[in-house]
Length: 203
Image 1 (cartoon, rainbow, N blue to C red):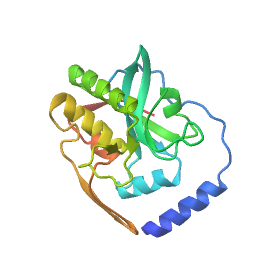
Image 2 (image 1 turned 180 degrees about the horizontal axis):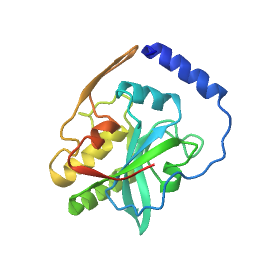
Image 3 (image 1 turned 135 degrees about the horizontal axis):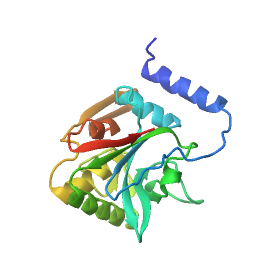
Image 4 (image 1 turned 120 degrees about the vertical axis):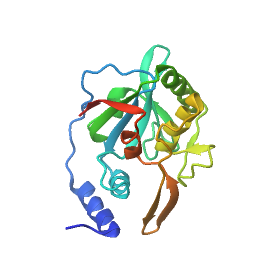
């Protein structure tokens, strides 16, 4: 049975309310992450379910990029509703890989890598600069406005800045759900379909 969008949201709300509290652990396997790696995860919340539905049933709802922060491997990503302190806002943030892939936040993950290591390093550096500028999350999902960014927009933007080409090969789609309409949206699955990235590991 295929649920309609509104039914999906209601079922997701019910499921999230009924789920039991789980012990937190990292789902990330023993893999060496490199600066510029594109990382994907499946969000456990309602937003993640809606994104995956809009993305044609994709296994992933969120994407980030691996960066080097003073010799420490971190992940920069634009995300709503993951505040680090009281009064925090939805913004581009930086997390340890084990936190990004925490069982509290995700059910699975994937690591993609560019064959162009120079562009990857430059993209990672650009992402770190965006994090340091505390760029806000783009709730309008407007790829034309780079003063705010959503997760896929961030990764696409830094790779285009680094290499001059689209890492998603210019894939764009429209979203038409009840009370949710956006144009030219980049989805997590667009990175998987790109010939410019190869999968390192799925879990």
